[in-house]
Length: 288
Image (cartoon, rainbow, N blue to C red):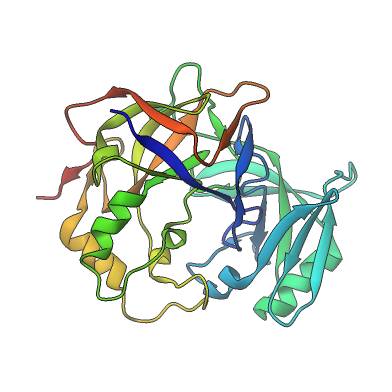
């Protein structure tokens, strides 16, 4: 299959906060550099996300001049150095039953997000990466991720989004699904059958369809989650099924992806995408 290309690239320095859109991204073993490298946790260590705090969508982020910069509405800016402090407090994290550790970015960062959210919060940076589930590992590919839910990369298709939008009363944009790489040029939902792809010079493997939580119902420009769930309702009617990897039931959109890391690896908007290996069966099964 030819004619597929990358049309957008995004990464999310702080989990559940605003995206950084880029024309080119570099990769580490954990995925796109700085993607989900930071995460907010509450006083009990539970991670904070748009699932419970949709206003996090309005926190803009960027990486510049050796700093992570965050800007919450009405809060001014917070700057955190990218240089690690060897004396930072190390905190254990348990994100979706995948354990790792993070370092506390300090009192100023904690106070900033506590004030914004109206509850106790701390900003952590990845220290010990978390493992990809054993059943989703691929020889030669990364087996770790930072504070992403479970995988280094989320890939989505613009034509699949267009198909979804034809069934929605109000069309939505791809940022609702918070993908890293959006491609265009393949038939809608053809990515369900992809197993290995080459994105520019990056070799990557699609290992699992992505089951969606309520977050795609949040307009990322408004940061509110209403009682209505229009995106979930349409996906439930058209894309509800069972993930054969773990037997999880859900509504699927986008593809969880691991990559073969090589130093200097990068992907650019406009890069060609080739499907190296595909299956005759899609990677989720309709629910009975």
